[in-house]
Length: 478
Length: 96
Image 1 (cartoon, chains in turn orange, red):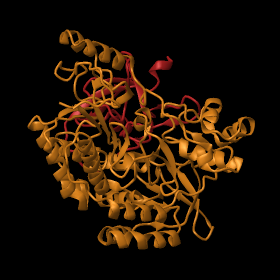
Image 2 (cartoon, rainbow over the protein chains, first blue to last red):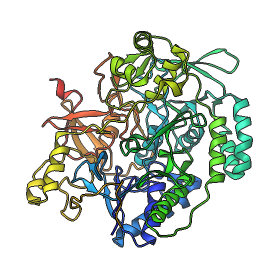
Image 3 (cartoon, rainbow over the protein chains, first blue to last red):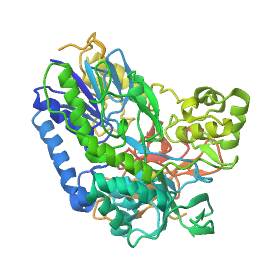
Image 4 (cartoon, chains in turn purple, blue):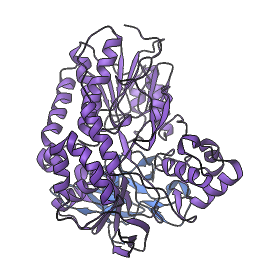
């Protein structure tokens, strides 16, 4: 049987798995989370009591349906599910994962999701500054607020959604600072309302009663306060002990890059994205779905997951219904216009790379010496070379480089993905070795669990350690 | 310093004792290491390349800001690691 590997068990990965299972395949699903659902429908650990309505609000039914769909497939043994594992490298038809043997596959569906899209604000390296997504995960998965008096800043649908969720949960919210101007929001909002009126109305309603300011400029975060200017340019200071930052989302594309996808600069999404055909194909035996390829949100991710799996099935000679994503794409594109990525304009002293403390001044100086090519600037200035591998600085860095050299972001280029796409512990590598041999489970059981991210022990049962097969995505077998 | 994190819900859970930088602390069953530490502390560790402290950033295992050490050596990512009773954690173990 063809072995299809799905990376990610959020809305896209779950629907992709469901589509394949319906066609009689038994996909392998690897997911970093301890429980399936992805970040959007993140499930708290066992023993937590809040119900789906409390956790997911208006999306509770969708969340429950997805969780039930996936748990059912696992219970019936229709998928090989490997939770708490991160795929860190892809080579020669094998996915290298933390905590187990490499997984051989004939075809690969990547549903890797997105992270917050960040830009530097002077002082954002301080303790107490988090991404908006972090604040939402803390609330959903742990039932906590990351501060007593919180400022949320940036733009995008998560900004106001999170604000309303925090208030509902009883957190202290000082201000919601949106860098998008009201004019852009109204223009984009018309397109959003035409595509999905109810969803748009819900977003507008959410804003009522919030300490919300549109069209702001963020000047800095320091000494327990955010300095900002309002839409009329008047300086303001809001005291706080925690700040959540985010400018909509950035597709998580490193694995697509390692798998051989080509990339293009997207004016719509203001980021580099893998090139796909109208079914989500990015190469021979390579299919992409969800926010990891286009930021369509959770509903769009479910459709894209089904579509990518349908493409995979078509390539295997099996027909499957192909969902229509056009309305979702129209909505998402209008949303991207309503909440644009503003120009990155920070002083030389501002830190761009949080990992290694590289400032905007060092970046600009490097551009002066070497020219505006993203990977060369990375090599010399180390922006994007730190432990997050550029996830949180590279879009801002490309913007700063392009602006400084008076060229386009497309011309500056993008940072190439490098394996491993996650830092690995020595224990991770030892575990891969010992379970690849798959000889004596008691040996690997003696290996301490250093990953700790994994709910499952490092010792992978032999049934999970797939035999090495001489195959690659470019030579699919049925 | 007082804690950074405020518990808003799910406060029924059983206590879990652990140590952080030599202090005896108590978290709750189901906490991540990050949650448990930041309920009483202001940060997780010092920054390697600047004067500031760090307290994690993305909480989804992407930014790698929250790696700390255990006293017996292995490092862990605090936002993705479930708290276990008796853990002995250090903010900067690898430096000492």
